[in-house]
Image (cartoon, rainbow, N blue to C red; front, side, top):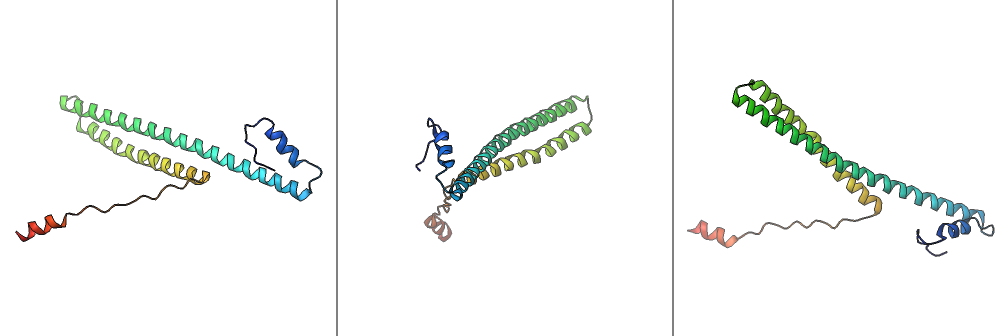
Length: 148
């Protein structure tokens, strides 16, 4: 049995026909159904993880917008404080709100990285190893400045 492209006309019909062929032994049919189940489960996992990546990406956008809003509120609170219309407490409250808005953004970014890595693992993508290049050292410049 050759590989059938999913979009090929009659591919499903030929697959089902090969599986349900009464001439095949029951063990072969069972193995083919099991293979089909594994393939379907893997496709479901990849699709689910893909939408998890999209969700995590949108969560980053929402959290960034939240931090921007909190930064604008802090700027407004400082402007009102400088104008003398509000107390320093409002400025401090805005600073605390901005500081408390940072961890959800960091968490959203980390969740995105994890989701992308899990998707890569599901599809079997092996990322190239990162090369860490040592800093270039100009030893001659160091020795000449020390010896002078």
